[in-house]
Amino acid sequence: MRVLLVEDEERLAENVAAALREGPGYAVDCAADGRVGTELAAQRCYDLIVLDLMLPLLDGHGVLRKVRASGDRTPVLVLTAKAERASIIAMLNAGADDYLTKPFDLGELIARAKALIRRGKGVADAAIRVGSIAMNTLEQTVLRSGRVVELSPMEYRILEYLMHRPRAVVSKRELLEHLYDYNWEHHSNVIEAHVSNLRRKLDAESDVASIQTLRGRGYRLMPADGAGCEVGL
Image (cartoon, rainbow, N blue to C red):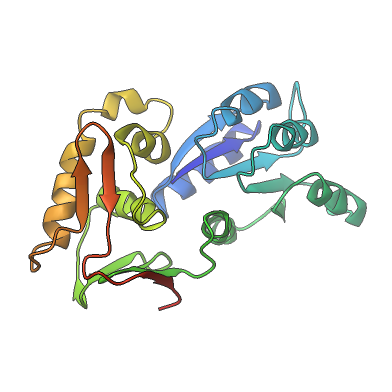
């Protein structure tokens, strides 16, 4: 998953970005002012926007209004030093999905970020199943037909993204945009290797391929046993 962090306090931005990268393994792009944040958000390649309200050049309310006015429904988690009821109501009415009042616990931020991303993709539960593949996004565990599948962080992130889009064709570019930060061009030659390793591990004890490769189009995760997709394992 890919997150846009718009925060002008350098130390706080570094800590939040590090927590999101090292905990759930998200790719994080950072913007130190509202104008840059708005420009990055306009790319519509993010699964979550973490937005400070007090920003230079364009404040958080302005960024939020522009994002929502463009029709972008990406979940937005607002960071605010204001705990006044009127301010909270105003930002929720402007289109924010959730908020945290500074100072906040990084563990709580990660938990809320995960929940917003799940809800943004129509998945309310931490557990997802696609055919014989079961994933728990809270514990970051994967099972195939009850067998534990050990994945590298990048393999897990690829599978998590595909699990949220079962049967859909996902291009390599889409994967790169959601799994890496804005320097993703440097990683364009490795996505095939990660998918190959992921497929090998998932299919180690099965004759049915879990991930289809459609030449020139991308990848598709299919229920390996013909079953459907569900949440709430």
